[in-house]
Length: 134
Ligand code: HEC
Image 1 (cartoon, rainbow, N blue to C red):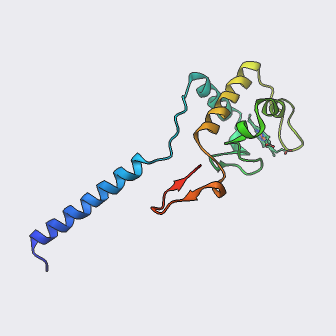
Image 2 (spheres, helix red, strand yellow):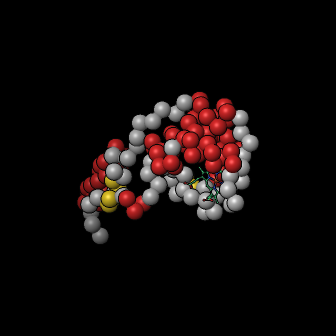
Image 3 (cartoon, rainbow, N blue to C red):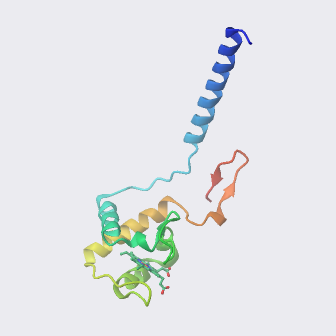
């Protein structure tokens, strides 16, 4: 049995390395600055009300009938998204949203586009095990 003094030193070293590593991880999170406005919040509520997530993923989470829409805004642009919501396709239902609702929904899609990248194939794994999204 190691003396109590040695146990205390080992305990302190483990606690210190835990705190240092936690601080390092949390201070290097890939968080992006994107302003969350009331309009974005309304758009998110519309997204939830119409249950888009039943068929679409955001940041990779959600239903798998339709594609992930995290980066849809920069990939397709607002006009195509608007047309898609208004007319639908064989597999995507059309949604009868007002101009205002559509515009809020677009703000939400623009916001999520600015805050993350959905496709993990584009991530670079760094030596410390964290990822680089650019
Ligand atoms: C019942 C399932 C379902 C729901 C609910 C749904 N979608 Fe879709 N959506 C799809 C499918 C399936 C596609 C692919 C359609 C195709 O390519 O013909 C699609 C395609 C899209 C696209 C075009 C994606 C691309 O790049 O091709 C957009 C934008 C979109 N949906 C937005 C929405 C929004 C916004 C909502 C909620 C208001 C919603 N969808 C709700 C099934 C759904």
